[in-house]
Image (cartoon, rainbow, N blue to C red; front, side):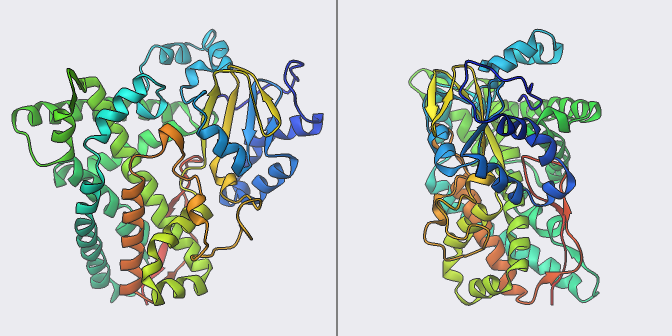
Length: 429
């Protein structure tokens, strides 16, 4: 993703006043500043005051309004493959790393039809609502085991890191069980996943060491997954990996490279966003104790409450779309090849749709209109699983520890796009 655009205006593109162009061009520099990483929402509001879409004048546009993001995320002529962007193609001419990446087949979330249509259909055959419903008991069992372990340590009086001890192990345990990954290997997956998540951030945030760690973790995880596939072909089991191997559509089936890419995607996407949902959600509830009490008194609101938490502090802050045709979005002219960065976190705080968007209201009637899970053909396959995990996890924690409270400042993760906490110390009451 290009994040350092030129400030020179392009006369062929309709842009706002030069001040707006300058603001758009400086946006990522400001967004990466510590105070805005801790709380990006005032910055998003200032940008949205300039318009629902603000253009840099160099084939890039930033969408901050809900309608603009929703329109583009569902537009069939909006590509998720950054290789089709004019900026990306220009930079690949002089950047060997980008040029090499242009030859690699992207994973499912960055594919366009017809390749995306084919893979999504095959994966959806294994990732069914029935499987997710069957997992609810497993999620509850894992959550209860983890809170039992927390309770056993609570008597010592020292603060407990609820991310390390609860928010992380719950979704990683669930997704590994789904895939049929041995319990003994869970820590290895955590190591790989922490490295790979850096790859979804803009390049300006990644050091040479990060790039090396991403490449190494990806290679190790691919090799591990290939071994799992070889075993499952000989010894199929009652797990998602075996189901993916068995998925066919006529003569079509998932190739080994596609299976490996999907397992890596499911591992990272299947737990990283849920870790952030639980951690961000708890942090929001600590700041709004009245809302936390409402959940404790009315646990039946869990599903709606989770949507409000997703809206309030989105685990995924942005996605990219490339315009395949000339189009207009929110009265802004977008040319074929232009990059449109959809700021999901900003869209979910848009006052045009959400009343008092900076407030937390667990009974908000339209909380489900957030776009934390994207939309259109790329709507998150695991959205129902993430909602179930978030609701069960937070409800279990609040019931077992009704007086849970922060015991010190939270530590933000080093990633920007995947917004979440690395540490959240608490006392259990």
